[in-house]
Image (cartoon, rainbow, N blue to C red; front, side):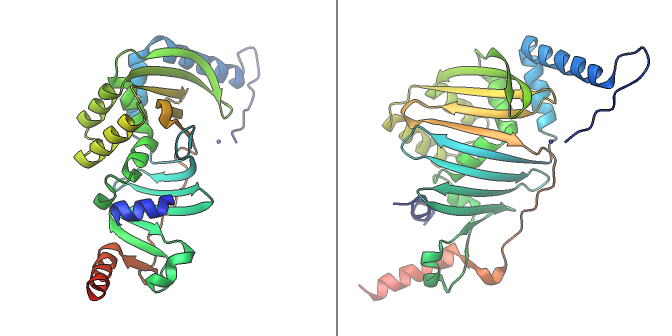
Length: 281
């Protein structure tokens, strides 16, 4: 069964450098020295640096991300655009099993693109609209949470045993790499404490982790000299690993509400389906 069907059932940077003149250091030299000092601070002051990263990342207005899941029962790649101002808006374009699906979250309303092959059943309409709370337990809410750069920093900030792996380059950007491994119980307890998992999502996560015998979860984070996450990775044993790469911080992002004429309401769709079943039994 395709991911779209599963969801339907469950829910139903170029910068120019100008060199200085005279006997003083050049601008390029100053920038390199500043970058080096920030990276050293990221490596030596772990808690302070993570707190600074959380503070700065919470002020980010827009960001793009690429999420890739590999090594588990279901593999996919997702392009994500996030507008984190006021009411959060998210667009997710997911490719899995030869299908491409676009999902938009705007003002707590979720719009799912209906595959062309089944649009005729919905009067040719392209989008299905539902309250985002209906996505609880489908995994979509968890994917949006996992893509949030602020959430990634907060997770490391509140877990014990975080270590510094060292300096690494991600997408051409110098970063410091952090890592921590905890039990699944500790990981889920933290997410529940942070209010990131409701009861349905928590139960869904517990069931999946138990099914695949996942006892430990490793969380990794790469932070750059702007104190912004550049990569996040979660490794979950037989469930595989999920990597999120962040780019285009504070660059323009446009996420539009689909036209009403092209949208069908999920609740009404279920009502019509119920009536149809009642007349055939």
